[in-house]
Length: 242
View 1 (spheres, rainbow, N blue to C red):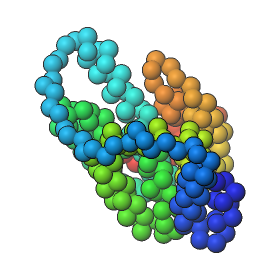
View 2: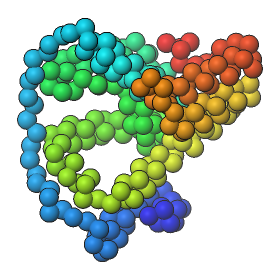
View 3: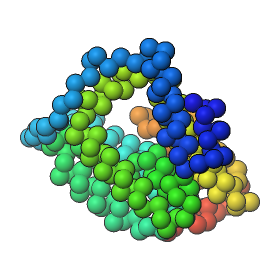
């Protein structure tokens, strides 16, 4: 799959991921690594669960989930959007996703957020060379989420049928463009290179403290390093633009 991706990247680069996906699927099929016997197409039906509030649940479950969503997805997602050169206002994004989370929480969808990895895919050059024409990628992603969510159980069965190596490789290839673009822009500012590098290293390390993932601690580590080395917060961050 990787070799196929590198070869097709020189011919039709926009479709390199799709071609690698098809080739990987065919190879897995020919090697007998696919098992679709357990897959059954069925439409998911929303089921209402009446909320029941307790202090123990709020402190032990609600607050940690809120912190993980804000730090691991929203903050990182905003950073990705800023790195891609977009200046979308922060408040409407957080307010909208928060209200939707409240409305859909009784049906199990309590964590509607900016989805950092999805944002990286949809705002990167792979979506379209022109930043002003990348919005169809976000729209297509949203429609795909609705379709996938409608057949959630079927999707789980599909992932179980696919080899783990297949899923890991295709996920890595999808993020190639986003990682390259993000690193290039992060290293442009001479004063902030060390902070950007520390942010990247902590994030990819998988560090987790107090149930909060590495994306948040990478952000904190990068800010601290930049403040120590320059004596001031990093300029042009999404915190200032918010």
